[in-house]
Image 1: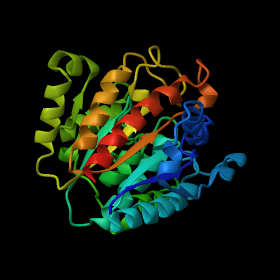
Image 2: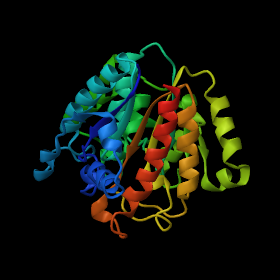
Image 3: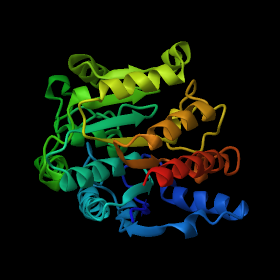
Image 4: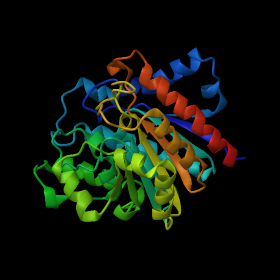
Length: 318
């Protein structure tokens, strides 16, 4: 019988600040305080991380610690594909958002011939590349690895050959490149981007539902439009970065907090609604950082409330 399998990926080598590796633990603290058996209910699989690299200076200016991320992608790809092979549902709880590229690789390794849709709920587009990044932090690049793009049209950097070699490994992870097409990506709440990303989004007509549009149209209509847009996709992956929520309303307990985001009830609606959708094959939650939380552990408390509720809908359809 199909069931949820929790995949814990504590990698934080893609972020610009430390602490995202503690996000899964922060969720467990909330569950414990609420006397919840959530983390005992499901089998859990741990992804080996390369976080020890944070103790060393990186050689890769425009893709920091990309050598370690290749290993994280390999580990994640294997685990996600094996969970899907067993007809179970991978619920991925990750550190920084760089992890998502490995998750998508795992999905496509299992389903190389299925058309994948991606719903990216985030304050950031995460489609930078080593050729465009202003920071070198790879948590701003995972969707670009899935798209298989370098975005050379917007090139501003000249990465060293070793960076390019590792970057190509990320793009080709799982044996499929590209893994997703621009027309099969939908953004929700993206509001903090740089010009290379804006240019790529415009050239490829990627749809972003801003917070204003979500509230003007209403949650139900936006969800319906997204389903219609991704109708041709066989399977759908949901990536939920907690910084999609308004950092003033919730907390700043995430790597790159941004104001004017979704409120928790709006985020919960989307996660619940997409969890019910039979096409949804994987959901990932990322970027909870209790070290940065200005309200003790508030971000994890809000995220746990969302997590606990949408998993009920997954259970009900499995």
